[in-house]
Length: 565
Image 1: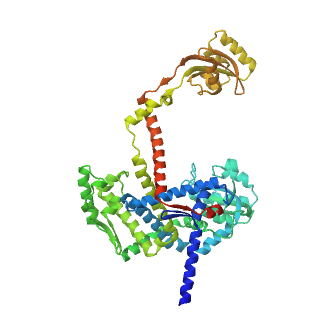
Image 2 (image 1 turned 135 degrees about the horizontal axis):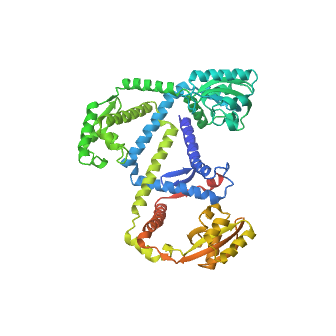
Image 3 (image 1 turned 30 degrees about the vertical axis):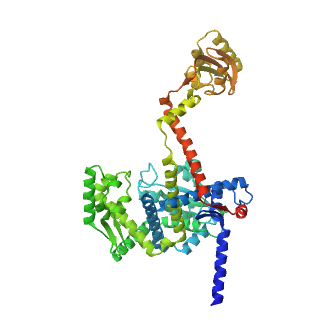
C-alpha cells in the first residue's frame, strides 16, 4: 500500500512539474500556457514555423497582450461578471448551440461516416487530378439560359460520350456543346484539384478513372458531366497522419453528399427521444404568455426590464430532466431583435419561438446525457467564449462607461487648438497637359497672348478627362493636386505658369483667385472634436485601468520558457 502511495505522489509530482513547465506567465488566478503563446505567435507571424529565433522585442508584445487579457479576466471575475444576466444568456445560447451540433455529429454523422470511410477518403487525397469536362445543363439545373429538359440533357450527354469514345476531339466538342460558362477560356480543362474540392458525384467518378479514361454522364445540380481524366500526380502537401481538424473536415465533406438522408434520420431520432423523455409544449402556458405580452405591449412596455414574475415563471415546455421557462425564453430575445414584438404577441409566431428554443434545449440535454458537455474541446471553447464576454463587459464598464465628454470639454479643446480647425488656403487651378514639348510651348505662348485658356485646353490637352472640363480643376490646397498645386502656390494667384514636367510630358498651369485660411466654426467642427477627444480619453482611461490592474494582480513570467518557445 505504501509503495502505491509513493508511486501516486511521484506521478502527481510529474504532472505538477509538467504543468509548471507549460506555464509561460502566471497572472493573478490565471495563466498563459506555452501552447496559448505559440498559437498567438502563429496568428501574428503566420509564415514562421519556429519562434525560438524570433527577436524578443517581437515576441514579448504578443505575450504582453495575453497578460493584459488575463489581468482583465481577473478583474471581470472580481466584478462578478460570470453571473451577469446578459452574459449568462449569451453563454447559454452558445453552449446550447454547440451541444446541439456535437450531439448531431455523434448521433448522426458518426453513424453514417465511419473511420474506414474517412481513411479511404484521406488515402485518395494523396493524389491530385487534372480533369476536363463537358457540362450539359437543363432547365431546372443551376446552369442559366438552358431550355432543354432533363431527359434531353441526358440523351445529349450520352451521345457526346459515344462521339468521344469513337475518337472525336474533346476540346472541339466542349466548345460546341458545353454549358460551362468558362468553356470559351478553359476549353473544358478544370486544372488540378484534390479530394474535397469538387461536387461529390463528380469527384467520385473522377477519382475512379485512370488518365485518358472518360466517365459519365454524372448528374450534379449543374447538369450532366462527361469527364476525362487528363493527369494524376502525388499531392505534395499530403501527410500520412491525419490531424483532428483534417479528420473532421473530411467527415463533414462526406456527410454533405448524404445530408438529406442524415437530416431525416436526425428528425426521427429526436422524435423518439422526445417520446422517451416525455417532451411536451404546454399550449395553455404559451397562450397565457401571449396574453401577458399583449397587455404590456398596449402600454408600450414590452421590454426586458418590464417583464413580470408571472411571465417569467411560466413553464412553456418540459421533459424528464429539463424545462423552458418564460424567463429563459424572453431573456433570449433581446429588445433590439428584428420582428421581436410581432413574435411575442402573435400566437403562431410565439409558438414557433417556444418550439424552436425548447427543442434546442432538449437536444442540449440529450448531449449532456451523452457526456458531450465534458468533451475537452467543448469545455475549452466555452471557457474561451465566456472569458471573451466577461473581458469585453469589463472593458465597457471600466473604459467606455467612464469616458464622459461634455460640451464644455469639447469647446475648451476647440479654443486651445485652433490650428487643427483651420481650413487651409486654396488656389483656383486649371491646367493643360501635352505629351510633346513643342506642342506645350505653342499652347503656353497662346495662353500668354491672352487666348481663352478653357478653349485651349479643350483643343490641345492630351488629358481627355480634363480637356472636357476646359482644364478646370477647381480650388485646391497646396497638397490638393500633387506637383501642379505646389507649383501654383510657388507662383501665387492669377498667373500662367511656364511648362513644367508632368506625368510623361509637360503641363502649363493657370491660377485664379486665392481663398485665405478660414477657422471652422465650433458647430461645424463639433463631430471632429468629439471623435478625436473620445479616442484620446478612451486611450488614457484604458492605460490608467491597465496600470491599476498591474498593481492589483501579480504577474510572474517564466523567462527561460519564453525564450525557448
